[in-house]
Image (cartoon, helix red, strand yellow):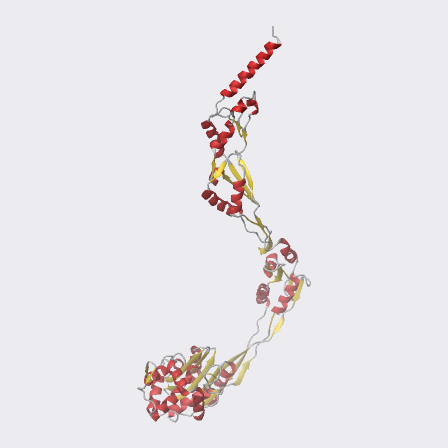
Length: 555
């Protein structure tokens, strides 16, 4: 029969056996009630625990969120490595003093909910840079545009910036579980430059303009309803200003009205006027036409589009006076020559002097006394002063000058028309002295070397020079012959030499947009001086003028 003594003895024996069992538990195995996540790992050896840890580590993922972006990566790829020994030690930690406590094994229930991991610095830094780029995005500006007759609206969105440092700090500070660990990174928000509120008013106005019915009614023609695509092409939206601005694309409306005008207009018939030597000889009457007043219609459509006037635009065709076409011709006479020169110099930026040197001696000039930049024609005046030194024995053609001789400089100044030698002579003689010299020779005050912008001359003075050169009264003897010979070989022959039928001795000049040519022309039928000075034209233009004059003089 069980007595109290027997019971106490039995209980004591049980306790002793239980403590003995606790003492016999291996120190290198997990305690019986250990768990790793959802896995029971009681009494697992260190190698078994390592396998469990590794399996859970390999299947672990990290979900990283920042702003509107989410990305997922395997934990192992982030440069993490698992600490097996530390985790195993936690599961097998059951010291002797605890084992001596009866039934303490029941209280020993270690549960590893998180993995003990460390990170490799280089791998973590590289992954942090990559993740930061994936989680960062620029803000999206609110936008407003027109496409295929419809209003296209882009909603503003905030941007987000994440740095590699932000990512690294978050990864190092996270507690990683088996499965998926969620990591939140704050980042920095970036506001869009153009907000929805910035385009709201322009959006409303554009929508109203597209919905507004517009009818163009031209008197006597069928009314035209403007479709949405056309109205959309008339609108211009500027989102670079705040708030965004809606305006009318004047060029698009003008192009539309111009196209309509081509369909409804009646072209006038021109009045043909026959003019001979500047005198009207007869005319053929034309007929008026009719067309839209394009600027006025454009203004009306602008107002209708923006809701500032009635949606129906009623317009009438306006009468168009017939244009006048002049059929000009010129007789081979002094009157014809003067009429052509007067017309050319009054309607174009040109100065002309013509003087026959033989035969009837016809003359004509226009704007001959205007003083303008001479370009290289001034070199003729400089050579006249050089010739005086040659005649006086103060200079010979063999005298050294720059990298050549005075004779070499003479060649360079006229034939290729280079500047260094001429500029050297100007420095040697002095600009004021050269002014006095040419004026003493009878040239006008319009020719001079001291004007503020450049050396100046006139077409009249160049003509006087060429006449005096030709007859020997200004430059004579061997000097005259050499100058004329070099002028016949000057290199730029696209002006007067191209336009005339004979051969020429000429001097050209070109500076900025001034282009000149001054020539003695030897036509097979006679000789004459022709000076053409232009601004804003070409040698081709000069050739055409020369051809007209040559034809009038010698048809």
